[in-house]
Length: 193
Image 1 (cartoon, rainbow, N blue to C red):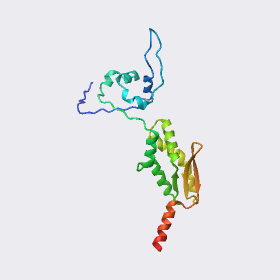
Image 2: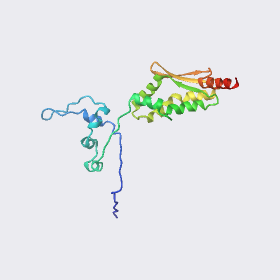
Image 3: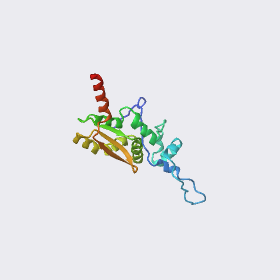
Image 4: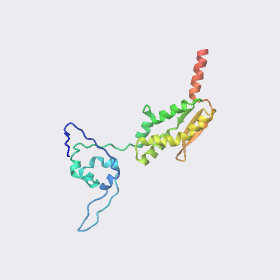
């Protein structure tokens, strides 16, 4: 039995990454009968996103009937290294701030500190994975998971500093009283005085 559905009040939204669609822009026309297509360098996806049209989606495999159901199409540019660094450092509740809070909640109140190149190194790795800002969570877990366990197990560790050497993030542990404790102790001394 066929059932009919009134779609006049239904909004259909679809999205996709269409990984590799930029390769259609690398193919150029041919010269002469039976000649092969001339290939050029594949352009950067952010450079051609405004030029993607129905013909490209049709080549991708969508038929015209489906494409006609989506009269409004838009795009989102891939995040840049600078944007991923900005997300890490300045967005409240970012994965960086979450890890800082995790370390601070340990019994020994460990201070987590990054040097600026670390943010860029993490952003570069995230860009290579092509999963956007979501990749930052995985990169932080991979980088800091073991350091967190070490700091949790060793009550003498007061600070963890992450810096870049040889292009890779490295972790340094310190038993020095961290900045948070210095501020707390100075406040206590000032109150007692």
